[in-house]
Image (tube, rainbow, N blue to C red; front, side):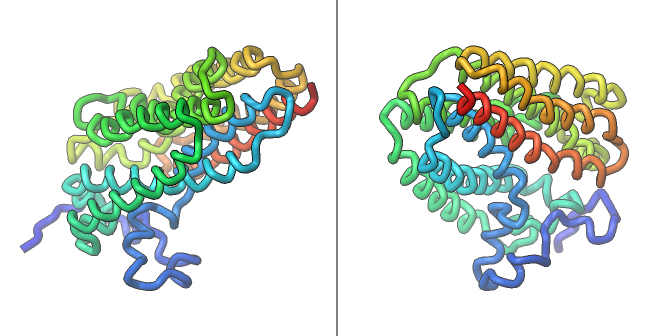
Length: 311
């Protein structure tokens, strides 16, 4: 008999959206796989995609970003974010079954078996490879190297209170890959942008982790939310402030016009709003502030485009 203990008794705590276009339009046999790759909740895909867009725009040399690359990276981000979710759920299946928010996910609920999940992961991997080989050889090599960060991240929460660092290494790899796809090489600007993205991720995923901190303590998962606790707001100032400074530095290294810095002001105000209004003990506020980082990423992308096209 399954005696899985759920650490939260909150009703309707599941993070799966059972309403909306997924439930209406997806054939029932495919629905667990759609949920497994989180297409019902695309914010993670946006957070993976936006550093790619930043980098593509940053490498544009005074012109508009390459639309074909923007589209290919969009498809790739949704596919590879889905693959990452499958890999994470395979690794965390025992933990997820003990947490109310994740217990109804396809693997712990039994809707998808481990063998089925592995086969689906392989399919997503082949789809991602089909997109990657559209790029130049240097970019393909950079893309292959990203697999190391993808494989490592799901296991870090068992060993360190800073798994968000490893998530940042993985989720911001597009800052390198986007530049490589345009320029066929790397330089200081995308490396600085990559560092900026890692610090941004430290901020937004610390906010996200505060939703689960009570359950995480009980099941033995580590996070920056637990490590930083009540001092989180001050750390967010440091994470976000340094990230924004590095974004500005990457723009200077790429030779963007002064209009870039003016256009970056709304993005800075958005991060300030997050820091001022966050309540680490209110899961709904944590979730909404986390989701709002998509808007921050779009504002940065717009600022880079302005900085290029106003040269």
